[in-house]
Image (cartoon, rainbow, N blue to C red; front, side, top):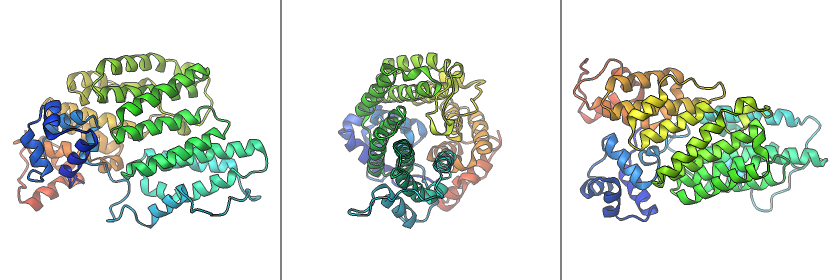
Length: 418
C-alpha cells in the first residue's frame, strides 16, 4: 500500500516543475538535506507535514507525491491483458474495419444505462469491474455511431464520448496520463459530433484534471475557465445540468489556482461557485445524475475543506466540515475525500483520536476506497509512530497493513491506550 519509490516520484515531479533541489527547498521550507536523502533513497519516508510541504512546493496533490492508489488489484502487471484490451479499445488498430450499423437487438438506451453503471462503479472504486466492461462499452458505442438516422448517430457519438471519458479517468487512476489524454481528446471529438452541448465541457474538465496530475497547472486553469465561460456565453447555465458542469469547471479552476499559490483567485472562484451551487436545486432537472458533473452546495464545501487542509488551515477545514450533510448524488469518492481531509486536519492539529474517528467513519462508509488510498496509509503510519495509540488505531493499522509493515521491519511494538 505504501509508495515504494517516494524518492523517485519526488525527483520526477521536481524535474517536471523545472526546480532544482535548492529551489524546491526554498518553496517548500523543507531542508535541502531532507530532499537529497529522499531522492537518493537514503530516507524512504517522511512525516505528513513534510510531505504536505513538498507537495505544496511542487504544486501537486499530496496523493500524487505519495503515489496514486492502485486502480486494480495488485497483480504485478499494470499492463496485463485486461488493460491491453482497454488500450486497443481506446486506440483501434490502424486500417481496421469501420464499425458496422447496429443489429436488430441493439438498444441505445441499454448502452447508456451500461455506461452510467460504469461511472457508478468507477466512483465506488470498483476499477476491476470497470476495466472488464470498458472494451465492450467502447465497441458498442462505436457501433452506435454507424446508425442509419442522423439523430441516432449523434446519440451514438454522445455515448462514445462518455465511454471514452470514463476510459480516460481509469487511465489516470492507473498512472497513465498520456493515454488518458488520448482517450479524452477522442472523447471531445466524439462530443463535437453529438447533439449534447454539455458533453464537450464535461470532458474538458476531465482534461483539466489530467493536466493537474501532470503538473500543468496553468494549462488546467486556462481550459477550465474557457469552458466555464462558454457555458455562460451560450446560456446553458440556466438548467441544473448546465450549472453543474459550469460549477465543476469553476471548482477545478480554483484548485489549479490554489496549487499555483494564487490563493486569492482560488478563494474568489470558490466563493462564486458556492453562491451559484444554491441555485442547482431550484432549476429544472434533465439528465441522468450519474452522467453529469458533480456540483452541489455539499460538493463545494468538500472542495473548500480539501483546499483548507492542503494549504495549512486545519482549523478552518474542521469548521467547514462540521455538521456537513452530503447531497444524495454525492458519489462515494467525494465522501471519501471529505473524511480523509478531516483525518488529515486532525492529524495536523495533533488530535490523534479525532483522526482515528474520521478514519473509522471512512472505513464504514467506503472500505474499498480506503484500501485504495495511499493517503489513508500515510495518516495511519504517522499516528502509529506516536508514543500513545488511541483506541481504534490497531484495527485500522491491521486493515491497511501498517501493522504488518512494522512487524516486517522489526519495529512493531504493542499499542498503548491513551
